[in-house]
Length: 126
Length: 126
DNA sequence: CAGTATCCTTTACGATACTG
DNA sequence: CAGTATCGTAAAGGATACTG
Image (cartoon, rainbow over all chains, first blue to last red; front, side, top):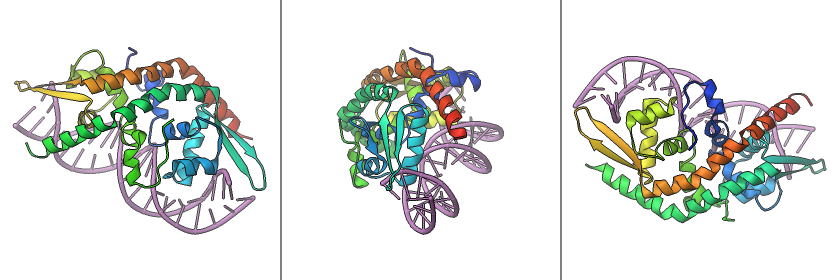
């Protein structure tokens, strides 16, 4: 396996997990990427598709994904203005690598929830 | 693909990404799981292996991973006390699903860093 | 429609000291 | 050795209002 440790702060930028993967994790980024899997979508469509994300946070996360090269941003000045976001080839590749993990999460959701119940019960009173 | 949207807060607990995967992401959890891939390790060994994590944060994240059923915690009361952490079968399975993504991050690290440079240059002055 | 701007709360993390 | 306790900082996110 690849090494997971670093000895200096400078070295952390050479760690793929710290420099690449940590930027895809977080609460919303995987969800946004998956929302664009099938076809490009406009800002409002992405927001409605996800449901529980605010406009400000969606904008912020779209920018970060665009910066890392996963998304394209296409502006059709209207009026009304229409901005469309789509996966780049790199983004499509990432989603491909991400999907096994998403399916795994779906398959093991019950196991994880059960584990939490057990832990919370056993740890409450010794 | 699985749906990524929710319409209520209660519904979010049925979303595998929100309820399972989001708990594995974050700055340290994948790194900790990978550090235990080959064999169980004691607390101090994990800390040395990762390098740039504090004792408090390591404890916190180990607890969370244990709670979700990915880690076992075995205490050998000393003195001196020795606490060993290892992957459960569920945890091993998760690491298996995680590795393709880690290798992908390693392979595409340069692409991502280049994308960031391009974005930062182009967005500085229009 | 697709953002910004502002304000506020929560969460994660870092640093350090102390303990069975 | 493997924590816990305390304190402070920084990043992420939520709510709401405003704009070209």
